[in-house]
Length: 306
Length: 278
Image (cartoon, rainbow over all chains, first blue to last red; front, top):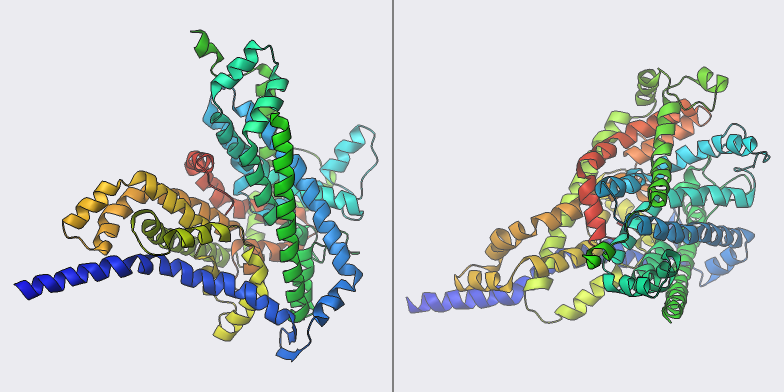
């Protein structure tokens, strides 16, 4: 009996010691293989001549980087990416905050309204892009038709640079505004109600209360939404890819984003070395943007609280 | 009584008007693609701006499902999204259980690592990922889509938080005193407790996988696509004929619309409890 009990105790000890690692290992192993390793290995590929078909070639140092940076296409794609990102993130946050404020009041049929604003989220970006590509048609699009009714000349949504960015940003906004509004709504409901009561007694109006109480109280949430939309927004691919049938970002690359450029380098030109170089630079750009946004929103929000 | 009045601002008529506009804007694009997708090309030319649907929806749908491998893509999307959701939920529940309820060396450091990786844009590793898949001979295989999506740092974080709140430490302690192994504790105590959180995580993962385009577009063969990839093929075939393209959009959106009708309430509360973009 005694040896068996000792054996059992040892088994239990081993179970308690080793089990935790067994439970976390599927995540860490898989994440290492499909997440971290490819990201790191991208740096290695970017330092070589590397073709989609031929595979690894000679070590070329930073040549892929200097080649890419020496081309106007990279800078064009960077400009487009930043422009689409700004056109989508700034209105997105502002409108989402307004919707959240409306949802935060005493509404009848609360769930109905909340579900209603979330509907676009279940449409795939690919589907959204196709619908809006029709709505923003240059010749027979509904948007140009409506503009015509109020006397505005047709806009060349698929030819001119800024209009094409507006159209693509509209797709992003359409899909994410409601989602972010619900995140803001949750944060608004956590604001202690006596703050509002105090403001009311001080004679502050709705707008004033919103600006000097609600917004500062939502600081952490706003930072969170901005940082996540930065990470996603700068990698945008689906919408610009589907905005026309050729998928190159326009005849003159009017709406070619960095990820679209990366795809074109890697899978159309079959130049993996350069594609990897673009991936790494995009990675750095995302990090820099996320940090800038974080610092910026922190300052703006804390100023508002004064 | 006064406090009750002030507790939440009464909804003004302006709020209702504003929300009605927002709702119309959310629903309109889908309605529009149904309108266009139910007309034939001639009717669109005749009156391109009518909001009234035509009578050609099924006819157009018949063309769509023969132009692209629609049924195959539907089956693939269901298989891929279901498998990915199950794997993400399982792996996240396991890791969440360990982080929330077990004691081990390096726990807090590893958890910080998981949270930090939530911000890593792993999509940028596609070049090596493609090289790995071609070495494995997985190009064109659905597993090449499933495996890279099977882990989610957000899922681990979500499950850790959920288990911390939903499962009292005393229950774990009691089960250990009873001589249950860790596996048994996980299986018969943690898993049942985590069910609502797991359902929520599964739902969001399903939607994210169903709508995912970039990587499947790169790795899958045209003959064996998922729905978003098939939609791209439809666009390549019929870009000028919007009645067919937008008919395809409606067909491919339908399954998630049905899901939304049944689970929309859960989605709303999931987001409000702190879900982030998948």
